[in-house]
Length: 423
Image (cartoon, rainbow, N blue to C red):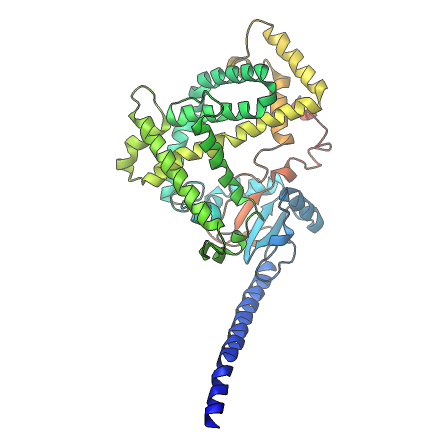
């Protein structure tokens, strides 16, 4: 009899542990959810988050910026809060709000939030300016980057930019069906000359392929794309259960090693100057790690490839959709340049092509490449704006789609080829 009771107690033990574990888990989830709901009352309005996952499954995978604009109208506020798990993300949907926070309060909002995929999984959370928190290291990276692409030096790049533009024009004339690849080659080539002192002559160039591969990482910051951003603990799961974190770590490590080797190859070239060569020469004095050196040059690709190629591809789309605009721009170019020369930077500086210049600006509004304003920002301390709390470290994303379609400024945002105020 005693043996039976003893055996029954042993059998009940796992059940009791399971019940206690379930109760503890319920308490933890409930506590975190109550904390989210209490914090939510102080933040800008937005959709009600669910326990654990927040609004993850309410954010569309395709064109989430359209939904953000819709929510902004629904809640009657240019700022909306969406939840990635139990972490708030504030989306800024008008230019005035973005200017007030990111420009006028830049001393507070120049930092970065936590990035699980783009930062921790890629190993760049403490080595890349795009993911660094605001501080001395961030300022050093910014200073080095501005030394090669700052407004005071970009004019030095005009000569080879003009040469590459002429080569692109020839490629478009000889092989128009392959225009996207030609535009990508052009974009990578300009950046490669600045970064490593080598141009990209072939569309299938290995550097070009690696550069475009690197661009995929930028998508990791799009809200709703990755479940690991809402549930960071997924990053610690074994590869056989969730392979994404391991794959990101492996690919990121390979790319970092490749671009570090490319940097050293550029530094060994005594004939060409380059950003890589300059950074490697300063590396010992500045105490930069190899990972930092690699990220500094690779960031040129992130800033200059997708933005340029995307804008040029949108230009092709716009000219096809609005042939009357194309004809007007062509007439202006022909009247100024005739048939004997190509346009120069002097033509633009002197304002000889006002309609064509306006068209370029309008296309960047009409189909912005960085629809969500690039890499999100975060405040370095708690802040208050228009009565709403913005907690320290909260991710702030600009919705350029909504800003560039504001009815007060652009009453006909989709079909207007050149906004009248530009003329």
